[in-house]
Image 1: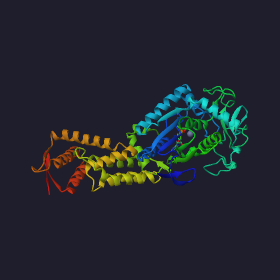
Image 2: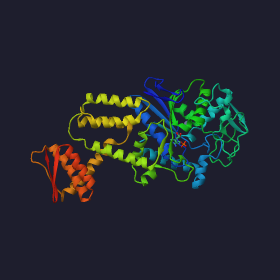
Image 3: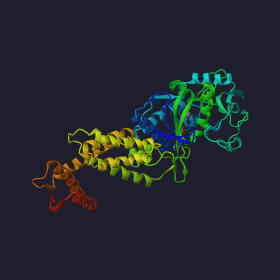
Image 4: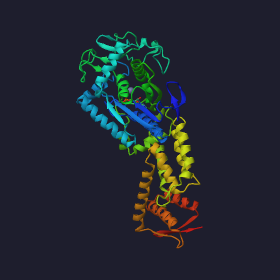
Length: 489
Ligand code: AMP
Ligand code: ZN
């Protein structure tokens, strides 16, 4: 598999350190509010990456943290603690907020068919690990104590800005006008490993440490949680593009200084989903959530399809119109699959399927080109050498990566058509030629029942569409009062 490695800034062949075993780490959500659909774009694309690796036979172990402590309003060390902000907003305790929004996050993931990682670790579970890492960093001279807090000393590193070549003077990130700069820092780029003395006297979660009662900085959790579950070497680390700096830059600084060797070779970053008026943000009052999509009548999987239609390394603009287009595409796709017969009793032809599987894999291998992978579905549907059983087998196979409920959605559609045809049959007569093959007769009957229902509802466009569809297959219709008869040319 080949994908873009943010660390080397080029597409590279992915080679895990140990055979086919992949250790994969994902920065999890900060659980002070619902995830917005931008956050979920990142998790959808990371889910596809994980499933693509599994599709190719890799044995993946994936770990995700849950940030329930230490993430301040800016990604640097300034502003209010996000969890405290959530607790205050809802008059609940920080732990109640964390539990509620962790559950809400996984409920959203389930609706989007995002697989839960093998290990999910809340940051508050690993305090001893942070204390251990900070102690070692202090011992090795990579950290210092100032004003009661412990800071990472970025001047000790040969190269701190590993993803980009910022100069310290350009460091505007996190510096907002309403917060005072932290004068304890020796260098602007230094960051907090452990807070004891801070502006947040009312911090709800505090733990004892060799440096006084306090709480960890945000970045240390990912370095420690990844080491705890995946060991000293990590193959693949993912997150949204905003995580690259300062978060991932700081993770690398901590982990490599602690370990004394290179830590993670491949970095995968998903670009942002934006609204047409700019960045998506949880602090801007009402924001776009999966629940909001559902309230407006959208199937969350339509949003998944919308994400897969674009490349993860391009920013994506969300509009309702764009989502409506995805609804049309999804319905069209399911309708085409529903037209396949799942009951032929034939075994799929695995030999004939193989080149289609290889083609699909090539799409994924090419920097996770999900738009191409979606077009491979149409290649299957159009495949002249494939029977229905093989087509359905291939679509199920692709869906282990795409997770769009292709087969389930189509089955539901078939069932709905049958129910409609049964109710229409009561007062709508459909006459087939006596010598019609049973399989064809059943297919045509279903379509004509749908057409009868459309006519009852005065949906002439749909009625004509079905007539044209049948005509293309050489079937002529003759309407009469209370029914229709058909003949095959
Ligand atoms: P947070 O809950 O703020 O820690 O963010 C969770 C994940 O969502 C991180 O990987 C972020 O990089 C990612 N993220 C944040 N905003 C967006 C966005 N607008 N589009 C895509 N991913 C985002
Ligand atoms: Zn992280």
